[in-house]
Image (cartoon, rainbow over all chains, first blue to last red; front, top):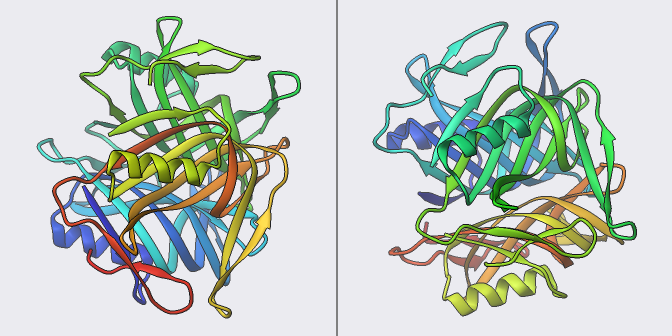
Length: 132
Length: 132
Length: 132
């Protein structure tokens, strides 16, 4: 179990990607909170088989991030959904595509001693675990 | 600890209910994310002692689901709250009453070696843990 | 790992603060759901270096609370972000400053056998973990 802060100029997903690569984490659950700048969220358009993206400019409280780590084409891949709050307390969210860290506090619960979870591409741009 | 996907035509709550029954899980914490179709959410009306339900038609990103498993009248019962995002990234949520799975990724942290948590009915339709 | 309900007249943060103090919990991750009355949420104003607060009067489903326990000036401190839903299923949220418990179900995952996480004050009113 890893509990740690991120408090430096970094893209959240890039930071988490490097963190798990360096630690050798292949399968894990992620739970985070804190604050983000300029998050970009996505909604999966099932008709088109691709994500519609939306930029949220400015500072947001990161109310919750829920996701996981698994292997995609052999490399650790971060899948993360977020709920973020604006100054008025309104919440927005979806699939996270990017966002700069202001201050993030993170829990990563690593799964050890089992075959790593692996994603394979199915319809559209969906990558689904195939060995769970 | 169970990390797994749900990727088949199923009601989320029914699927989770079957999963925990088959695995013999009686007490657990649940954390999920993914996407849902036609979720039905509820708000507890304290005056009436019952839930007001709202249907959310269409496809939603499941930004977060937080809940647990405990015994209700001797059977494993899923209590789950969800936050879901529409195409514009607006979030809605509450107590989950139903919703079809599109693709869900789930963490279930099982509690072993302790008396199972049990719900008992109190005022209205509240079922509260009585032995924690 | 602690799974328990809170079902009494209490401020959520005060209750959790007492709980962790009594159990000697110094470092932990928190995940909660349930319902809250009159929550007060905050948004960190980076220009002013302080939180803007907003009161949300009435009953709300507590869709998700994500946070942690660490030491601040030597005492266990609860840092908690929440997403709450109104009667219409609209979600609001941010940094939790207060709120009365209606019924809350909580998971606390304690970190044992490591140096407790400690916060130190940096710019503005940010208290950041310094030893992770």
